[in-house]
Amino acid sequence: SAEQISWVQTAYLIAEVIMIPASGYLSRALSTRVIFCISSAGFTLASIGCAMAWNIESLVVMRALQGFIGGAMIPTVFATAFSAFPRSKQGQISAGIGLIVTLAPTIGPTVGGYISEFLDWRWLFLVNVIPGALMTMVVWLYADFDKPDLSMLRRLDFLGFALMAIALGLAEYILEEGPGDDWFQEPSITLFTIISLGSLAWFVRRSLRIENRLVDLTAYTNRNFLFGTLATAGMGIVLFGLVYILPLFLARVRGYNSLQIGETLLVTGLSMFLTAPLAAISSRKVDPRFVASFGFLLAGGSTYALSHMTSEWGYWQLFWPQVARGSGMMLAMAPLNVISLGTLTPLQVRNAAGLYNLTRNLGGAFGLAVINTALTDRTAYHARVLSDHLDMGRAVVSERISNISALLAAKGSPAPEAGAVKMLASIVEREAATLAFADCMRLIFLACMVAAVLML
Image 1 (cartoon, rainbow, N blue to C red):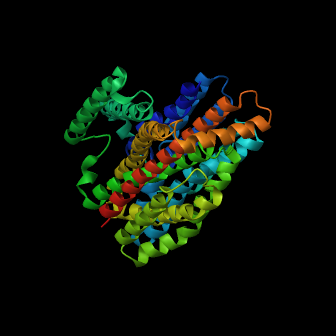
Image 2: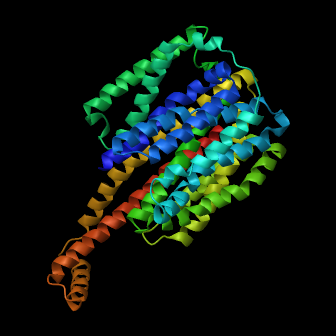
């Protein structure tokens, strides 16, 4: 069922958000090389497990393992980039990392489209195996930045970890399932919200009082990190929101298959790739705050253009907005990383990198929850408004039905008038969905504008 399939993604996201903030502590305890290799090797093995899943339940379990074990990779890369390299190189390194982080979800629909069209679904997971194995071997052989402190494992704050897991896991569940369950109309969502907020408050209080804390929250006293993490939440909304909403529009309104969707969205990935060198250079030559703000404004301009979409929009109508979106996100991501993590000490970076990436993921989850809710509500609203104008007594409506009926009758339809009414209803449904997608683009535009202001 659709609900079971949604858990394939939800299980991964819940497990991932639990591991991400703990990655800093574990990298100090086990060393950067060991935690990264465990994470990448575990992710690769879990990918094989996903491909070998024998039913939906086993696939959900494997996806959860994949998210939990692999969750430490990206924060570890961020921490290494801002602690092992001099500040003069951080702009270039940040651009490279930003390209990887943003490009992966952007070209995902393209790669997934080709795999779904020409190969078996299991290759969606098997495609990770060779790169994952190579990456693990290279890091193990050549990356040796620090030494482990195994005594930290004995002092691990298990209660703090449990509180964090409950708070973040339930928060992710609420954001994933809330739109479909009508939010607080569902008693379980209300209960889980109370438990999540209570666990979060207890975790924060504990983290500020004990010495061997799992997550060091003092990084938020750094103004650059504080505003940078708020802006990266906006980045998450833009990144994940558009990756979600554009394929949905192309499939639901335009009737595109997975391959056509992938080819259409490839434009964003290519524009990001081509803009990466400019992002690296501009981060060194210009105040990174202005570069990041300009990037958000450019991405916002693309979403504003998309807010005027019609049901006839296809590849070429989406081309330039996607170019602006990809270029803007790349220009924003590289300096945003430098602003957020560049002024922290190496020890602070290890802890803060997890919080930074967690904020982007939670921002994306929050954005998707709002988008899903708005999409449902606005589609129903526009359908009501459009239906109110379909009064059979109106001459234009009657004429349209007569014309469609005549066409259907000419094609041998046994009930041309009923078919005409049904066809008109499908047109209303299509146009209502298009207007709702445009409304969601305006929400993403607002997120871009807020993030742009935060950078100044």
